[in-house]
Image (cartoon, rainbow, N blue to C red; front, side, top):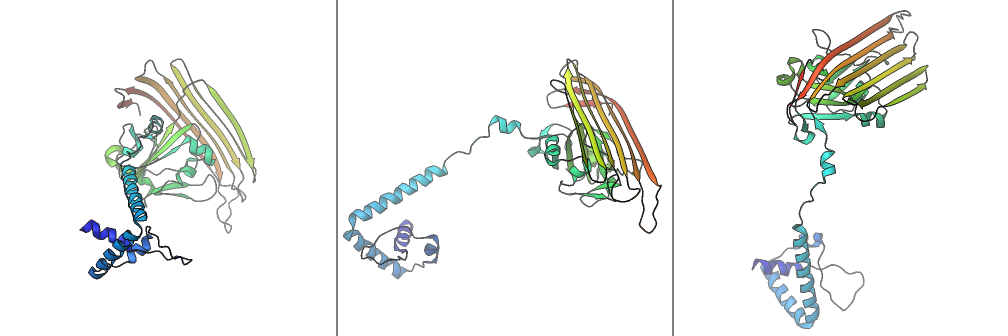
Length: 343
């Protein structure tokens, strides 16, 4: 009885016609007309008589309408049973793999934490030169720079203090001093493979400094035939930048080297900035499970301090020099577990 009531409601709905015609047709009413139609017991009886009378007058047309309706139901049912397409192997292999969230290699979609990944392809496409510029596009991070290039640059995660974000370079903590703050002003993208940003407390994995999150920077490792890239660019305010990058693998030895130089006078007197940075990763792999290597980083910057326009300082400068040497041993116990010593 319920199905018959629905059929009568469908047949009773009418669509206004633009040009009058003595021939009456049956069809599916628009959704709006169907929703606005109210059915009562009296109207149902009248519709039964109307449809019976029309069926006697136009038997072929009525059978044709029923056949079309049945065909539409069969097609819609078959369409609903179509299986969900299975991703191709290439799509599965393209899924990013993250390490920082759990210290194990897992797909990004399976990460229990909120993770963002910035790759070297993103650096090239967006013409990014500094790590701080890349972090500006990460949700939940706020990058604050106190002035022009070379001035103090801090990163705040989810509104917490900058020292509450742990910064790692290939697993090595590089936060400065007891306070734990880190200045991103001189950190370039030379020889950087990717950046993983984990938002949220990660103290159980990385200690008390990871209260707000973790920023881990991964350097490149040489693979394939050795190659090199050399480039230079210039701009206004006597701005010049030169950089080079090379990586490759020869037998069991692999290497990756990157270096850059930036010079700019900026907009005010005594506001110039000079920065030289280099990073190198060397490794020896006697087998697929073991790699013995060393990481070298060096950075020196000279930035002027013009102070305010009411109290200019024409000779004040800040000279900053950093270097890091870390030997390390990487041992892959299984396909999913890696033990690292020396970092």
